[in-house]
Amino acid sequence: MAENRASTNEETYREGVPCWVDAQLPDVEAGKRFYGELFGWTFQEAYGSAVWALLDGDRVAALAPKTDGRMPTVWTVSFATPDAGALARRITAAGGRTITDPYRLGDLGIAALAADPQGAVFGLWQPGTHRGFGRRRAPDTFVWAELYTRDTAAANAFYGDLFHDALFGSGAAPDFGRADVTEVFPAEMPPHFVAHFGATDLDDALGAVQRLGGRVQAPPFTTSYGTVAVVTDNQGASFALLQR
Image 1 (cartoon, rainbow, N blue to C red):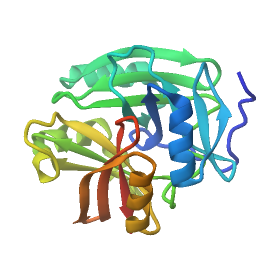
Image 2: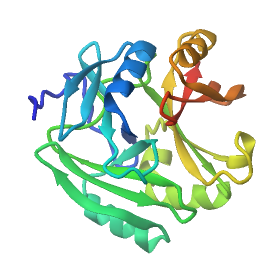
Image 3: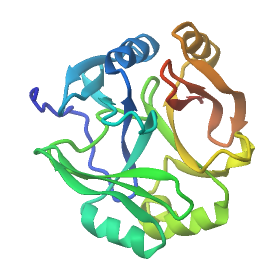
C-alpha cells in the first residue's frame, strides 16, 4: 500500500455528512484516463487495487476495480459516522438493510454499505487516518448528493431521523437533497444516489464527457442548488455535473 498521506485540508465530518465518493469500475486505468482528462485529477496508489484521485494533492475521490462482474458500475456516496456498527443497526431498525457489514480498511477507517427502505444504496465511513474529502464544494470536486426516490416524504423521514443534526442541526449546511425519481429519470428507474461534481462551464464539461466516450443521460436542468446535467462515464457509471 502506498503512503497513507492524508490531505492537509481534510475536515472532521459530523455524522450524516457526505464525506467521500468512490467509483467501482471494470477498468480502473480507463477510469483514470477519463476522469484525469475531465477533472484534471491525478492518481496515487491507495488500498488494494484502488487509487486515490487527487486535485492539487488533495484527495477528492477513489476509483476501485469491481470485484465481481455482476456488480453495478457506479459512484457510491458515503456518509460520515463515528460508529459504523451502531449506525448500521439504526439503519436496520428504521427499515433499511446492511449490504456489507462494517469492515476495516487497514488504518484508513471502517466502511460499510447499506440501503434505505426503498433500496437506494449508500456507504458509511468511520474515519481512521482517512477522514474524507481533502477538498469539496469546488470545481472538479464533490459538491452535492441527490437521492432520486419514489417517495420523497418517506426518504425525508428516514434520513431526517437518521442524520438529523447534519441535515437540520445548528450550523448545518447539507450537501444532500431528495427528489422524485421521475423528475429526471424514467419511472422504472430504481431509487439511487447521484454524486455531483462542480463544473465551471457546464457546456464545456458536457462536451468533454462526450469527447472522452461518455454520454449525456439528462441534459441541463435548473434546480434550487444550481444547474445540473446527469451523465455517464465511458464505462457506464452515472454522475452529475453541477454549475452554480
